[in-house]
Amino acid sequence: MKTETDQAYMKRALAVARRGAGRVSPNPMVGAVIVRNGRIIGEGYHRAFGGRHAEINAIESAAEDLRGVEFYVTLEPCSHYGKTPPCVDRLIEIAPSRVIIGTADPTPLSPGAA
Image 1 (cartoon, rainbow, N blue to C red):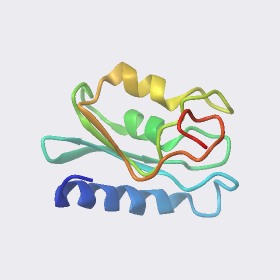
Image 2: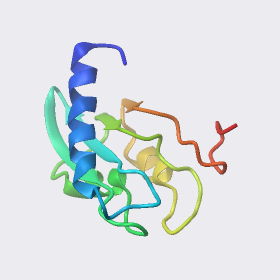
Image 3: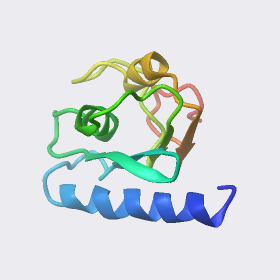
Image 4: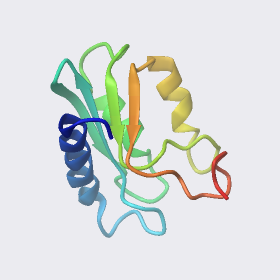
């Protein structure tokens, strides 16, 4: 991450992710925070196994246009179909200025997975 501000928003995303504790296994807890001009305008977390992912919940919690926002997510957005469609497709639609991830997705279906 580039700045202390990035680190602070990622810490917030990690705190939001913990709300899914005990309900998302075998998936990891994931949190997302959407920021515009230094102000959090949306947050979300993966609430339950098989349900919408953190990114989608954060997008749906925002009450304003998302084009050009900064998107902080604790896990790289999924790019494959599973129980839900790829989150990366929704991110492409909203066209954030940056997407900052806490860690790469280790799922074998992810492009960067070993």
